[in-house]
Amino acid sequence: MIAFVRGTLFEKRLSPPSAILEAGGVGYELFVPLSTYDALPREGEPCLLLAHDYVREDARLLYGFATAAERDLFLLLQGVSGVGPKTALGALSGAPARQIKAWIAAGDAKMIAKLPGLGKRTAERLCVELKGRIDPLEAAAADTGSDESPLPQACRDAVLALVQLGQPEDVAVRRIREIAQRPGAPADTAALVRLALSAR
Image (cartoon, rainbow, N blue to C red):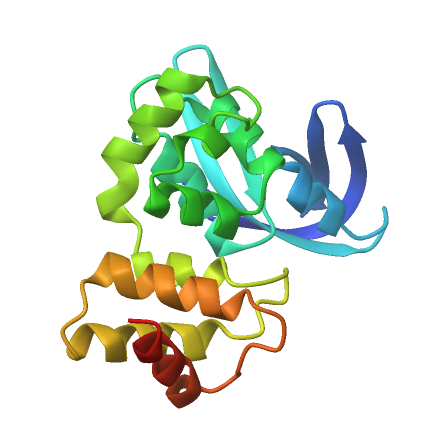
């Protein structure tokens, strides 16, 4: 099983998105989501991709990822009936992994259905089968802002504090997400908790 490939980026192709890495005199072709493709260095430069080695009767394919979050979600999506590697890779090309996790945790099948290769029924299956396998606190923290996610730890701590105070987890997640998305939202846990409690 190949866990990663480290070498020199020999070539990158956009259709379908893939990268050929030369390592030890061997060229490895890895199919990648668009997010990973965008993160690739220039050809001829060093490159490291996490990998998933997919073997079937008629082929052996390598899939590459810039981050562990992408690879983990790629594998998680394939645990749902009707979702294979090609579909999972297409979904990851449609939105950041953190955003897809947030949609699954929220049960937002409508947004998931907009991802490439996923229809309404598959999106609903993803929500039902994977919702319990996505950490709602992690998803809430990831869904609170831009790609830089400026408040993930504070949001997570605030949700945990609210749950300890007796609030249902889904209510705490929703309130913290709403507060964190406001302009000028506080960056510390205590202020987030105070605002969430005052909204009761």
